[in-house]
Image: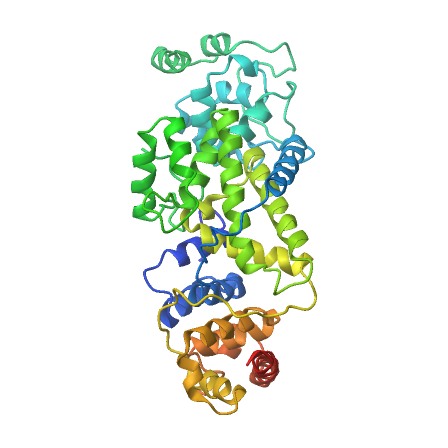
Length: 197
Length: 259
């Protein structure tokens, strides 16, 4: 029984599933704890919260000062401008076979996807709809993938695929150029070009 | 069609929001941004046009994703006001020293979580689109554990809401005992709320024991098939009893002070 689950079930997802159960009584809690022993304490805490959710007082009399909202906004702006030190490579977690299956599900050639991964394509020329599709297949956010694609071109080490072209760090090409020169079928090319419209 | 959530369930399918939230999103999507903002502005849960915070979270994220900066800032402000209001009840001036500063810190941390979600590799706000109050309660508690005051004062809370829930015999007896043997008290909704608040303020290990007892779990059992508190918390049954006793002692002193 070593079949890996398609992804690790993180705590928040488990709690979300639990909170959406029609009942949160003893049986439900027992079932979840048996299934996710690693999240037992979080589940217990969550069940207690659900058991006596304090009634939300409608405190219309007390007004939240604007200064408090402004302070929160400033903290938001500071935090949003300092993203996590390095932009993560959303492709990093893919092994050879999952890289290929990603190419298949996007209906592009491996070479084309490699060019995307290695940032050989100028980010500004990549249609937003392609980035969206890619992000959703990668299970990442559009912003994260977009930020990654804007980085400098380079060869990503640690990943090797058979290719009929010599790999090199060269000038970035446009999306259309990549579509035309990446061993894509005419249908694939047409589909990708349609994304730019 | 509202965008599906990023988080996936154990079968790999995206989580779905509760149907009433999905309906609400679909309805709001048909409006223009200005009309939506107007709908969001009502902060009173009792008003008929009240839009749940789950929906505000959804449109906040959508505004960021689509680069609607002005709309984003406005929804951000409205959501923060709601969060700030809920904090008046849970981190009240009467219950904690320096409550104002703590409330602002929690709001600031929530703002940073929104920023993380915006920058994000992680779907940091999905839970808030599914059950905002619960997700925020968890967020608040973990923040309070890090920054909260060491001593928590209690205060009587308002009495509306909270339908009857069975209280286990043990807690009931203990609670009756707290009040010098006045079992009538336990049926008093005001007392129940005080009890809830007092339990909420217990240290984690004790709160879990009391919470599980209230749900009807037993401390230990000879039958290995029965899920017991000792098993769930992975500790010895004597530890569980100890925590329970300490919790009751605290509850007793807190509630008697109030009585």
